[in-house]
Length: 86
View (spheres, rainbow, N blue to C red):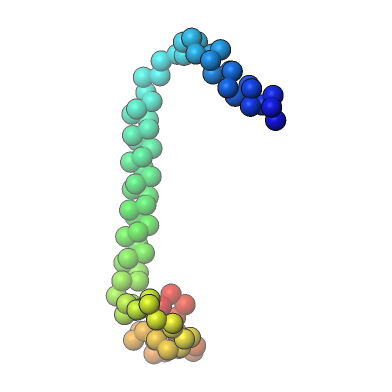
C-alpha cells in the first residue's frame, strides 16, 4: 500500500513535462455526447409524464397509504382494482 501511495504521489511529478498530443475534436465530441444524453433523458421524462400525468390523482406523500385505499378512476374494469403505477 505504501508503494502504491508513493507511486501515486511521485508519478505525476515525473510525467509533468511530457507533452501530450493535441485533440482538436474533444470539445465538439463532448458537446455532441452531452446533447444526445440530454435528448434521451428528455424523451424518457416526457414519455413518463405523458403516460402517468393524467391517469392518477396526485398522492399526498406525507401520509401512509394502504393498498387499495387510493384507486384511479381509470381502474374500473381491472380485476385487482389498483393499477401498479398509481
